[in-house]
Image (cartoon, rainbow, N blue to C red; front, side, top):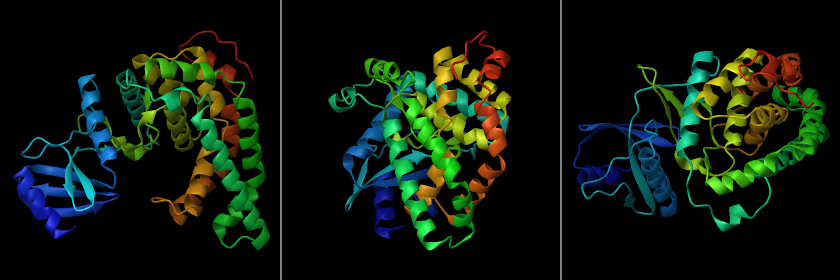
Length: 342
């Protein structure tokens, strides 16, 4: 970290920085006032958004999120050279593990609490009248990109183990993606969107396990508010379920318990639960990882992506069984009778 920045921080925050440790896209600071996390933004409006959002969520009762530290003048945004920095109190917790059903239920409950608080925010004119699902747009783009990647592999031949696995699964992945996108327009997403506009809801949109921190007292915190924006909150639930089901080996019971943990805090109708189950037909784990790697996005590495796509391949039968288990899910769930539409 820039020595000039450290000296400026010490002056502005009236502290002494004893050590700096980089982690992902932030830096951990050990100071005489405690352990802090510093994050820089290129755009001022982004820094303003996340700091004001965190404060608004706390005012609405959602305390289990990031807390920003003001400087001596009371500002939570510190400009330095061409960037805008924020300081957060470090949360003493471990990242959630989707292989642990306990962790999954805690993250689902925390996401529900965030969703309850993330309502009543003014909606922009653009979002309100787009009239289509951003989730489906993203999925269409992701599938198109994957098709271009697989065409290149077919033309040049697989160059490594990952491309061999991709080539083996290409047909099934593209078929699942196309089938889901064709049937998605029959799902009740439009009413969900209108409801989101009416209520002014926000979605986190990056509910990866590393954005949930569990403390020694088993409190769960949702962090990294950079991706939060106006959206249908079901997209978070789909993303959370998709990620956890892979590590839960697509067990029906894991889905039921996670949905129940969420619904106890933020009620879900049977139609919403069914919609989530149907949207899980889109092979998002596989497509996200492969396209992320080939786009050189931060956080995507060959070894990790290969491990994930191999897991998806090994669990293909379990995944199909889960996707065909709509009636069983509602029979085994605490939600009572439900007429499944397959």
